[in-house]
Length: 348
Image 1 (cartoon, rainbow, N blue to C red):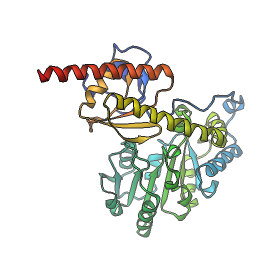
Image 2 (cartoon, rainbow, N blue to C red; image 1 turned 135 degrees about the horizontal axis):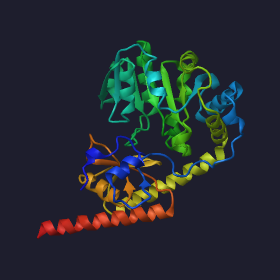
Image 3 (cartoon, one colour; image 1 turned 30 degrees about the horizontal axis):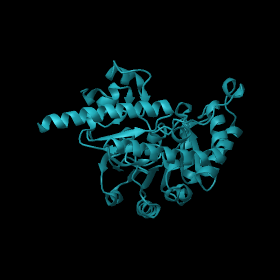
């Protein structure tokens, strides 16, 4: 069995996967990310998106469409950036160095970014403890378990933090496929709230590098000043404008992903793998022999997301083709057969 210490720290690194499982059949079926395997349709970009600096008017068009799609009060409440990841330390620097509490366990980059910004960072498991923070960070729905914090609870926390000059940051990277009534996008005008939205995950275009921060107008202006002009590349502008405006594609894709996640749950269930949560873009698995499952599937060319600090859990994204579904089924069957043989041997 492969040791998990050699696995990737984040999902999606096929180079590290090949180093960890050098004899695995190729290509890998990469289920280690929460990125939609069915990307928004590619199209021919205007040559000027590559040959000229992005036009300010085109950037405004992007934030206007993003505001409508996400439900922000106006485009003045939205700033676009080259990926959500680059926003994390920028948003953390909005607050003076102080006490940052991250509701965990969750995406580790939030704590790292806050520490870079000079904060004293701790992870807490109790939502009620966040009221003690100068800057509170919540991933909603949570990555990797899909936990949802209701909007009214978030607003109550934001009000308490705002009363003492604090800030609530809510990372809604997976809200596109979750109960959107719990999004705080429409509430950012109240102040003291920053909402982060990812473009690449739901639209399956992570390489475009596009993300958004939503907040009150003064906060957006502060973030824009940090980025300066031309923060978003021309091709990213074009894809963002077209995809965010394509509501029919979004609605159809949500239905398709929901069906696929049900199918994935059923497949895991057939082989005794319990699904403990997740979203329509990933499933959260909890089982004592998670390390064995990770290694067995990896050796079969199926890459899941493991967590070094939580060895009993895994995260699985969605297969992108019928061939990938068949490869996953075959690998699970092989693992289950070896597990059952081992159980019978121990019983003798």
